[in-house]
Image (cartoon, rainbow, N blue to C red):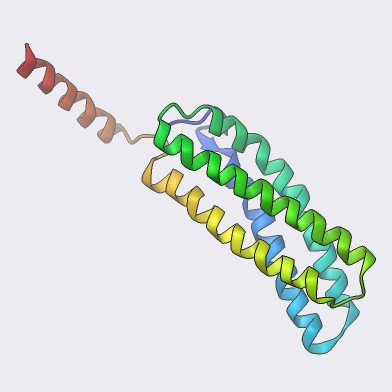
Length: 162
């Protein structure tokens, strides 16, 4: 199933999601390193990578929405809606987390807990995105041989019916 949000038959959304995923996971890793050594550099690193993840998520959302609204099949469409809702919740959680980090002391428990929850939600959302791409073929260019086989099957069914 092709996607309208693509460049040269390559879907844009998967190109962009690596940024919020990587930045938010690294933000959590930075938190853990800060807790071990209390070096403020790692607390600041967590803050800035979290902010970068929010920017990346905002950019990835645009082609993601375009892809989602191009899905005609109801089953992957439902998965896409769940994927989007979880991503919105995750981004909102990290935005709240970012605000709390500005207000609270470095290494405060609640922002780190929010990061753990956010990364867990991110993993689940990634699983749903993988389900869309690898099981339902959303954003995947059909192979020529597969298309030819499907055409042959359709022609065989028509011959048998007629």
